[in-house]
Length: 162
Image (cartoon, rainbow, N blue to C red; front, side, top):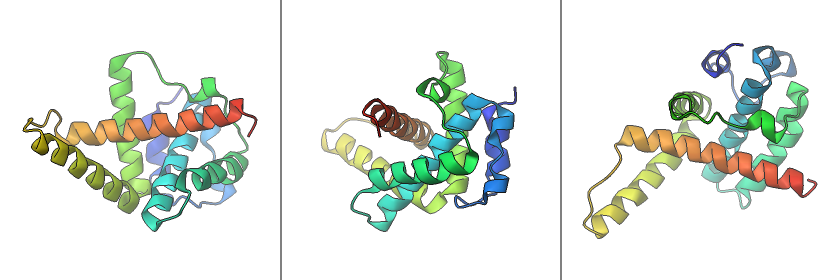
């Protein structure tokens, strides 16, 4: 099975609203395809937030369900979207998530990241505490947290019958 890095690299040059013919991620395996779909949803959520939409998460979920799942012809399960248990694998995935988000929705990702990092930095300064993460670590954790949040929202919605 090909790695998620290879699938991310394949999709990095494509905009979010690509044609159905180009969405061939199942050839990389269900897990990689499922993770790519979640990342597309994360990009949508970040973009809707940057645009000032009132309900960015709801709009991103709609995008995920109506556009991503349908165009790819594959609706993954929670198990398909799950992440490995090994810390090293998670670190590599998180770095790949950063690469994908920076390439697929650079303005939305970087704007949201910078805002979040500045808030983190301000809180640390206000409490006279040193920064405990470098910007690189913060960026990796930020991308990973966005993935986990969006995937968790999808899973909760599926349990509620969305």
